[in-house]
Amino acid sequence: MGPGYFVIAILGCADGGSQCTPVATVPAHFASEEQCIAATPDALLDTSNLDYPTLIARCRSMTAPASASDQQELKPSEATLRS
Figure 1 (tube, rainbow, N blue to C red):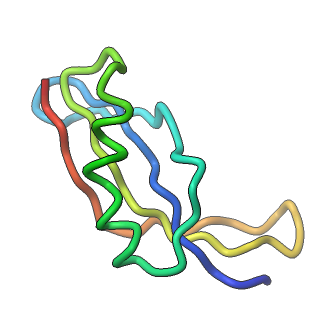
Figure 2 (spheres, rainbow, N blue to C red):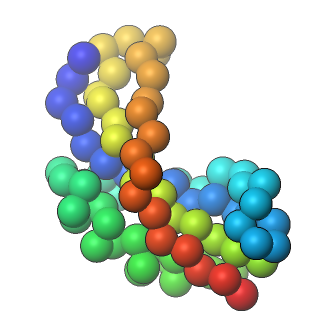
């Protein structure tokens, strides 16, 4: 496995934040979870044109894969934008 980093995943959710679906991933990589969390409000604003009642930005911990079979780990950090 390679070095780790964080990315922001944007999820579109039905009313009340239920039944969320991944709809976008911010192309930037962050060296720490703190940097990723700090960037989530701007990521939500940049994707606010997506047609969902609620958008959630989640920081995901990633590992640069040594092979295509390596998996990603979901971290609980998130921010929410409701329309």
